[in-house]
Length: 150
Image 1 (cartoon, rainbow, N blue to C red):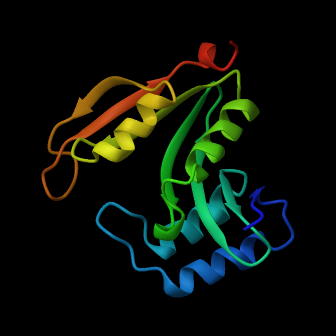
Image 2 (image 1 turned 180 degrees about the vertical axis):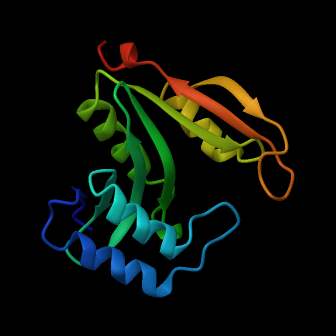
């Protein structure tokens, strides 16, 4: 697959997400199709995706605050995991917003995601005990802008 990083300015961006929504069955902790639709409407510049002209394989939803990028939802399709897709997307965000800190939260039990975030320079900044409906803990992680400037 020849992959491109796509943003809302891409001509078929909304169409590609509509294709995703048709088959989307969220797992625990994932956004629903309606939540993604609403984010695309309310924060059209707050999403980047990796894919080609016919299919998206990874995406990042985020909120752009004055000096912080808050990552809200990340996803890579099962057939594209462990191929560097999400790393490529995160790297592009770090370059695009190199003067911003990055924040995110992750389930304490999501060891694979935590390992990826640590690899990219995120550090534990706090936690929210019993944050999720199932009673599990959310870890708050941050990555300082200074890492992007090196």
